[in-house]
Length: 225
Image (cartoon, rainbow, N blue to C red; front, top):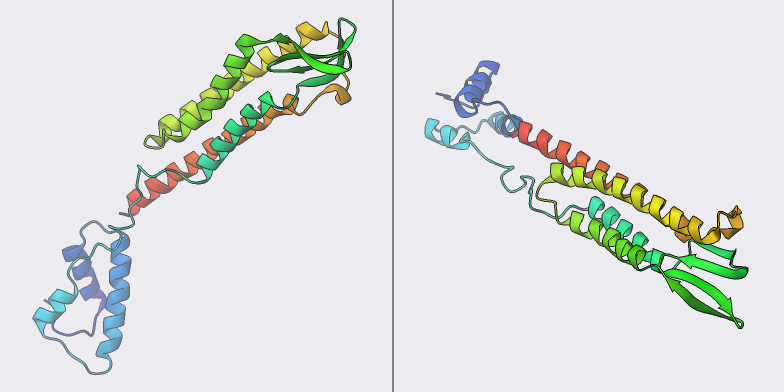
């Protein structure tokens, strides 16, 4: 039992072993409290043994700050949302433009082929399968956001989604080639849509890295507790 607040090294060891058998972050807070009380003792103020024991009851200062596995994550959710919006933007921006299909200036989007007819651009052919695939690929990152309760699974699905985008991009390129007749394209012929799938891959990769950092942070916090 401690009989005064002139705390010695031996007293601290006894208190650590008695109050906190598993040494952790709380002990550092305990040391800080003990040091402050030790300073008070220098002024001559003394406590009864019962008061001293009450002062050193175990505390749980971190119980309100424990990582919550159920919370929606921050920056990775933003990355995944942006990845989804980038894919949706394929409906707006062309993959290639100013190319000649059957001798007519044309623009190719994921929605189909647009050609100049009588001075106006007309939608001459639709890519039904590609439209459906684009919608699915765009929605998937939004679904990944809500897998936050299992970060390991979320990371696996992120990398799986990157593989899906590679396959989707290959399909999109082959569709474009089939309608341009294998004509060599210049950089001036490529539209913004040709870059969007690559941007989406980068965003999902950043999201996966952010999720992995959160997982390491939670494990470190668990070890400290």
